[in-house]
Length: 340
Image: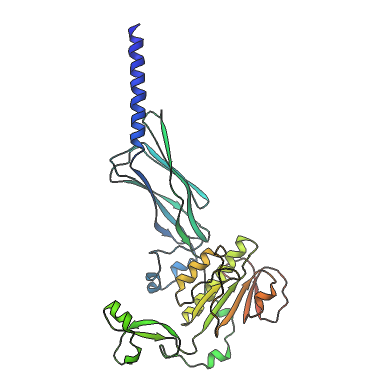
C-alpha cells in the first residue's frame, strides 16, 4: 500500500507548511484605532460653537455626549502582506469585530460607527489580533495594550437667562484688558506698551518682544464646586452639564473659571473652555488633590446631597434631585432632563 505512505507524507507536509505559514503570518502585524469623523446629534453644542473656538479645541472635532464618531480599525503589516487576520475588542460598552482575508503592506482599515456615546473617556480594552493559516489548522492570538481613544465632553448650554442679573454687575464699568495687578499671561508687544512690562526672558525664547498681561480689575472669577460623590452616573452627568454651562457663561463674559470637588484635584483656573470641559468629562474619577487658590470669586455649588460643609461658602447653588437641604444659600432645584 505505497499510496497510503505517500498520502501520509503529503498530510505531514501540509501540516508542517500550515504551521510554518501560521508562525510567519503572526509576525509584523500591528493594530491602530483612530477617531476619523464625528456624528453630532440633535442639540449638540458642536453645531452652535463659534468657529474660532472650535479651532482652539485640543482635537480637530470635539465629541459631546450623545454624539457619535467613526472608529477606524487599521491593521498594518510591516513585513509584507499577511492574512487571514481578524481583530476583536471592546470600545466603551460595545464589542467591535473586523476581519481581513489579506492585509497588504500598505495597510488595511475599516470604519465602524459608534453612535450616542456617554460622557467620559472611551477606552479600547481587551483588543486581540487573531491570525491563522489558510486552512485554519493553527491559530495565533496576540493581545494589544489597552488605551484611551477619545474623551466625550459634557453637553452644555447658556444658563444666563435662568439667573437674575445682579445689580452690582450692572453698575460695574467694562474693564480694560491688561490694567489690573494680577499676572494673567504674556502677549506680543504692541506700540504704546510700557517698556517696564516687557518680559525679557520670554522675548529671548520667542525671538520677538512679548509683554506681561495683567488681570483686568473687576473681571469675574468663578469657582464651581461639585458634589464629590454623586449617587448615580446619571446624576454625575447632569452635574457635569450644569457646571459646563456655568463655565461657558463665565468665560463668554471674559471671566476665568476653576472647577473642583472636595478631595479631588481641581482644574486649572483659566479662560480656556476646553480645559474645563475635559476636567468635567472625567468627573468624578479624578485623583485626590488640594483646593483651588482662594481669592475674590463667586462660588457656585452643584450638588445632589445635603452636605452643609459643601454649601457653607456658596454664593448660590444648584440641587439635582429631590434631596432636602437646609440652607440660606439661594438655589435652584432641577431633575435629570436636559436641556433644563
